[in-house]
Length: 387
Ligand code: NZQ
Ligand code: ZN
Image 1 (spheres, protein in one colour):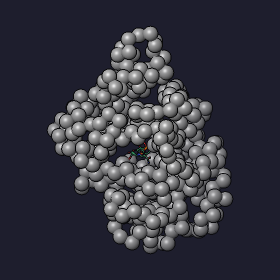
Image 2 (cartoon, rainbow, N blue to C red; image 1 turned 90 degrees about the horizontal axis):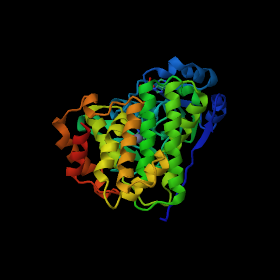
Image 3 (cartoon, rainbow, N blue to C red; image 1 turned 45 degrees about the vertical axis):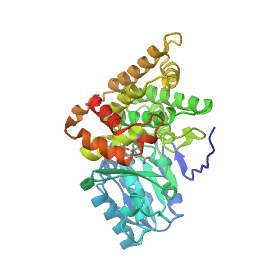
Image 4 (cartoon, helix red, strand yellow; image 1 turned 90 degrees about the vertical axis):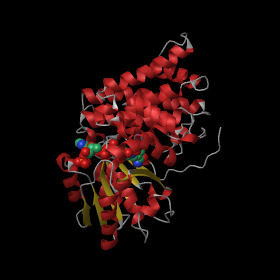
């Protein structure tokens, strides 16, 4: 078991109607709020109006229109400018992972005098960030419980996971009823994203029985409850369990004491999103089974066997290679069964930029250090088989 040093400072407030606590929470941070949100789903759900009703007496400045795969320019730059101009005390992010991620970069940029890209690109380490409170409306990324934000810079095809301990939200409100309106596409993408977060932490060299059990339970919960959410979008119990599973997915708690992973599928998918602006969870679902096939060998076999038996209930008396291959096939079939198109070409990606993307990933993502190290050639092969 590896040493670790871990702290999660975020307060989680979970359940139906918990937004009633918003005034008390916001009172700790000052009177000037930057309210960040996306393209309008929060208005349709009614949270936007609710926020204004609850926060009478506050000065609220808005940053709307944050897009999926949030962009440095204009969203992060506009947000930083607004924070500085209005001397904002606290950011209230209401939306999915994109809104929250963008808000994290803004929070750090607002406390820095130079170009915020210096921080996101790790040229300069943040010394501080504005406090962030969020109301998450989509179960997927786990951004509500971690200190990372993923920001895209279109002109350089960069999509960078910016991680810094200052970026933990101080408070996250999780009301599963807010996810009732998430459509089938985004619900499926959320399931695939969260499942992949678990996979990235499960397929490692050195893992504990404790973490394996936690991860295997996460897989089963996400598949079972994810299916229920798709069948009945207003199934509170299923939405609630899915939301909590997603929240646990990305803040490292599943991997404490394990050897590092390298997060290879994320490294590859982030480049696909950067070049083609695709939905993160869909890209992951397509890449994952191909990555699994690519890394299956004598050394990795026992992990796949364990995964197959404990997650999919495959007969443990079968030949080990058969179990492993069945497990990978089951993974593919599950993603297909929840409506995800399983080829990159279905998302408008052809083979014309595979070499360029593979090179970009090999240079920037450090996947030669992953559990199953990937060279540029390996990465190109995985993308090609996913087309
Ligand atoms: O823009 P609005 O109107 O809000 O609509 C959004 C958007 O179109 C909609 N939506 C959100 N909540 C809704 C809703 N529609 C109806 N009802 C609701 N309650 O859903 C669409 C997608 O939203 P987005 O925030 O982009 O989705 P998600 O939460 O999956 O976030 C994806 C982003 O997070 C990054 C991804 O790379 C991607 O950029 N990630 C962040 C991570 C982190 N911070 O830890 C880790 C992940 O691995 C991931 O990379
Ligand atoms: Zn992800």
